[in-house]
Image: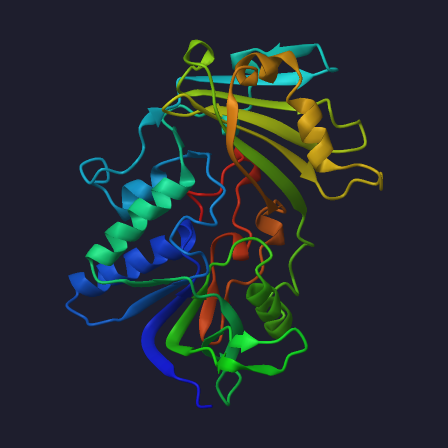
Amino acid sequence: MERESMDFDVVIIGAGPAGLSAAYQIKKLANANNQDISVCVLEKGSEVGAHIVSGAILETTALDELIPDWQNLGAPLNTPVTRDELYLFKNDEHATRIPHWAIPAPMHNDGNYVISLGNFCRWLANQAEAIGVEIFPGFAAADISYNEDGSVKGVLTGDMGVAKDGSHKDGYMPGMALNGRYTLFAEGCRGHLGKELIAKFKLDEHSDPQHYAIGIKELWEVDPSVHEPGVVVHGSGWPLDSDTSGGCFMYHAEDNQVVVGLIVDLNYSNPYLSPFDEFQQMKHHPTFAHVLGQGKRISYGARAIAKGGLNALPVMAFPGGLLIGCDAGTLNFPKIKGTHTA
């Protein structure tokens, strides 16, 4: 069966902050210069934001450059940070609060916002579509297609109607080929296509090894009496032992919602350590328990985090495309932020 194809000037894989920002900027520059450049964004989720683990701190420096009038356009940045708290957790009952003057400068969040990353991506998608970007949700990029000279040609979406053994069912339909003069990969951390490109073009040949962590996050609705919109809490130490690095966080968002999570570096040596179980234990510490005690969990998720820093960044450009965002590993870990760099 013949595979259908669509041709664009730019194809972008992933409708997260990196993919949508790139699409918006390319189309904005094209429109400003009266150039007809077609931009397509492919998103594996059923809708934009469906696979985003929401709850983040946003530094607006990049947004100020990308969409200077974001406030007038209704960007969902409704909760400015009002207070930073940093703790060293000693055990399941005690913690030492670090004085504000001793909090490292990169961790100060003055002027930043507590946001729902899913809502932010949906808003950004609307802004991109309004200036002519085409967004196709519900289609995952399964493979990369290459030109005869070895450069990236585009991507292939997954075939439908394939049995477990790889045979074709009666309703088999091959995926589509989306071809672009340039293809940008913004799949997120450890995207399978990004890993293929890094290996094929040896993009990390002169980079330090990437360093990974797992981040577990939950969104809670809490009692209004314990909700303090804009309060940002970070901590380290317990429940992780001295041989395991990582940290925890709690962000008070809008509408009586709180985001709580734990990050565990994946270089731990204890084979019996379970990041999920450590996270459940963490929530029983009084710092978190008094906020979550009368609340209910709304949603939860986990994702890999690339935290190797600048020296671990691969070469981001290759013949026919770019790696962007967490597909490349642009997280600024000292700030514990990656949205603005994506």
